[in-house]
Amino acid sequence: MIFQANDELKAFVAEAKTYTINGKVADYIPALGKASQNDLAIAIYYPDGQWISAGEMEKEFTLQSISKVITLALVLMDRGFEYVFERVGMEPTGDPFNSIAKLETMAPTKPLNPMINAGALVVTHMIMGNTVEERIQRLVSFIRQLANKSTIGYCEEVARSEFESAHLNRALCHFLKQHNIIDEDVEQLIDLYTKQCAIEINCFDLARIALVFAMDGVDPESGIQIMPADIARICKTFMVTCGMYNASGEFAIKTGIPAKSGVSGGIMGAVPGLCGIGVFGPALDEKGNSIAGLKLLELLSKKYELNMF
Image (tube, rainbow, N blue to C red; front, side, top):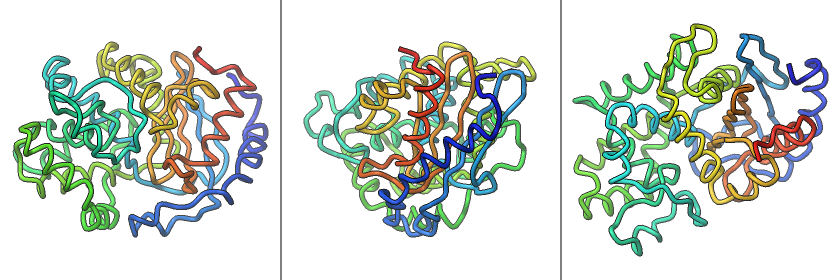
């Protein structure tokens, strides 16, 4: 094991928590605005089934943009590499995650990568099923398998709050539909996407999911190959290049862990071959990342040389 004891992890959490005062919860989505700014929690899950944690572990939160990585893995398994990447690119962007700018200048018109909102909407559009409920349950079932937890579902309050305030995502969908990148009803896709983002977990669940990615798609406890190793590799690559919004380059230099953040304050970190990390800290910086969560991962990476570079 990397860490000596929970007391050591608690000390890192206490140090990182001092940064929460400089952040702000995502109150532009009303249901997320109810979070406690000072919360910070972390769980670390190892391949041998052992785990350690510190902070407000009892708090549940929604995946938000972390779901983009998991949905990409599911869709790649269903549709294949060529189908997916004919419709969404593989390049990082320096623009904010909800920007429409690059869509207007790219030729052919397609989102630069699956981690920005435009790309994530295209990937969500590819989830198989005949109805929104059938498609969201397909994704939920996959997440339950990754987390080894049968009770995971989505938070209806958060999904409804996001659906009602998703005006920019609707604009992205209409632009994508105009250019024949998607072909379904916009309201139906927004309904599916907001439910996807509202899937609810805790830090332990998130660390368990991250561990499967860290172990190249293998469930370390059952030995089952949940996803092909190449798909896990593709997802981890996107986590490095695009996972922390337009702060991904700085995060790669300072921390060097494949990671994906969400505006609920979650961060999923997959240290290749070593462990899965789940972080929750709802106070965000100006780019939409957990301000204390970033510091916590930086502290851990520096002391225990987790940087993959």
